[in-house]
Image 1 (cartoon, helix red, strand yellow):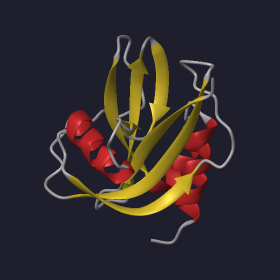
Image 2 (tube, one colour; image 1 turned 90 degrees about the vertical axis):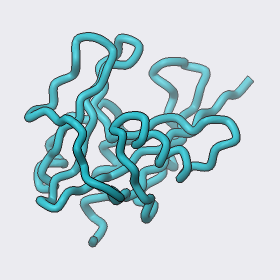
Image 3 (tube, one colour; image 1 turned 90 degrees about the horizontal axis):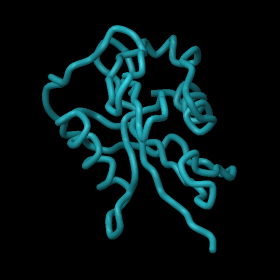
Image 4 (cartoon, helix red, strand yellow; image 1 turned 180 degrees about the vertical axis):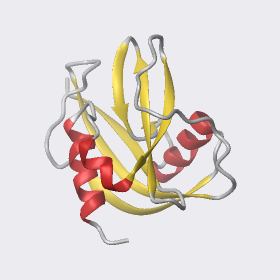
Length: 145
């Protein structure tokens, strides 16, 4: 039986030209990715992204343009029977960004996540965990905003 999961992530840029990156440990695995997560049953992709930013950062966002979608097959790192489809959008904060951030990308020792602002010019050097984020970063940096 073929299984699929849909994921959605956001590129949030601040006034200083920094982009938010998430360093997290999920089910014991270290991850460096963008804020976001899974689309729940009965939920739209943009709606899921708004919910994920609210859950992870207590931040209201509006969802902008689609930046990237993986057209290549990706097998889940958590379940080898699941294929992953990921959408990456630009997002804009609706209110003040008061969530806590770290100065460096450092994955927590226990399950949890840390937000880190990365200058846009340094995004290409971030050691993202998966090829999806690496390709999405290339698309984001190539787009003119």
